[in-house]
Amino acid sequence: MIESPPLIQPAARPAHGLAARLRLAAVALAAVSLLGAFVVHDSPLPSYVVYLASLALGLGAIWLVARAERSFLINLFLGAFCLRVVLVVASHLLLVRLGTSGFAFADDHAYDKLGWDIARAWHGEIPGILQADSYLLMNYTYLLGFVYFNLGHSVLAAKVMDALFGAATALGVYGMARALWDVRAARAAGVVAALFPSMLIWSLLNLKDALVVLLIAFVLFGALRFARQGDWRGALLAVAVLAPIENMRFYVFLILGWVLPLFYFVASSESWRLRLRKGVPFAIAVFATVYLLGSNTLGLEFLNPREVKNLEGIRGSDNGEVRTRLNVTKIDDDNVYRRQLIYLPEGVLSVLTAPLPWDIATPAEAAIQPDLAAWYVVLVGSALGVLRGLRTRRWAVLLPAAYVGGMILALALIENNVGTLVRHRAMILPPMIGLAGPTLWFIWTAAFELVRARLPFRLAQQAPA
Image (cartoon, rainbow, N blue to C red; front, side, top):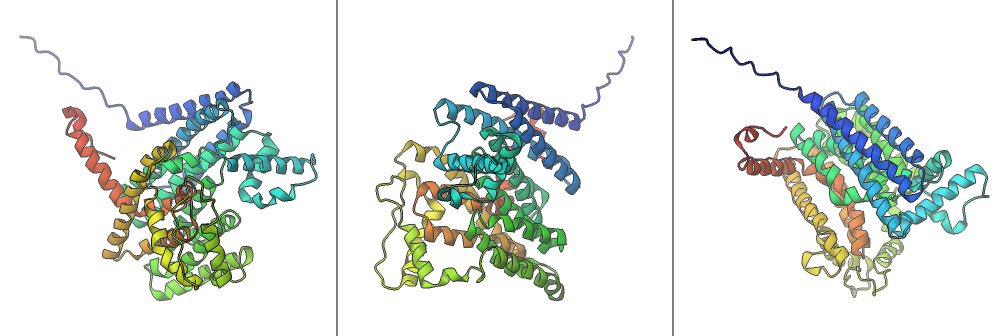
């Protein structure tokens, strides 16, 4: 009997080969989508310049800085960025078709107009900026002016730049979570930051929100890296990235200006001698930044009665006929401090829960329910992360938690509109997602196990990375 020759199994295709093809496919898909500019009779060249510069900047930074997890971070960045570029083009074409010239709100239209005026003023075409528009002069509109000055007026190019900000934010969230937890929790946090609905939406529009959220993520990442590893590069990053926030979100700038130096001493695991040696220069640098750029009282002027009353006035400024206005209880008390303290629990509850599902009355409110569901998961997960950190004496969790707490108090005292509240909550999502890393990883593994039980045998043998 002639025996059949032994069967030789072909070698498995290297996983990195598949990953490389997927990366190229994502980059190519995003590049092809930018040809959609022709549909609205616009040149795609400015968008391609910003797109290629964004790829070079993001991938170059990862290659230079990240040694561990470099492959995952490249995948995270490319996935988040290319997804955003495709959605930017699709949403832009839809908005143009709806007759809004590509704008979703009055704010993004105003930013675009001012950015183009800045570029024209730099070209000498107009004498300067109108006094009525000067309140919008900020780092974001100057950045728009720079893009328009060099590439011409292209709203789509500006949106591609915002897509870069949104994708890079996921890297900052990964860095925060990695400074607090293990690699698995950091991966889960990075993916959630890349896909979180509201963070995704704000990075598709010509708004300053994506840039502000990016800066917040990297300020806290730098501070945590400095506190946990004693790396001075983290301190330099935190101070350098803090400065541009000043003229875009002043109260965020002040809250970070107090949280970073004070909670560094809590978050650091080094001896108190080393903490003082490193923390005092860091505190001086942060307070000097706040003093020189923003407030010669370091923000303490907002504690005087007149300013506290102004904050109360902001909360009551919306017209009562605005449909999305929060129901703000009026407190009958002569003391402005007592009025704020009495209202505070109601305001905090609104920040954490509004709009509640049973309060839905419009299609817009119904549309944000998926985002609200994701918000609740991250809210619970971040609280569990803080408790886990305290139980294991991982005091570094208190640094991002202090920022989140300060922002919740600030939003509770001034917000009176559901729409702006949902928009501004994005500024506290990066540290919350970082804190929620272990919970997010648990949810991922639990969901994977549930799905794996229903898959064929060979697929069920695969495990999450």
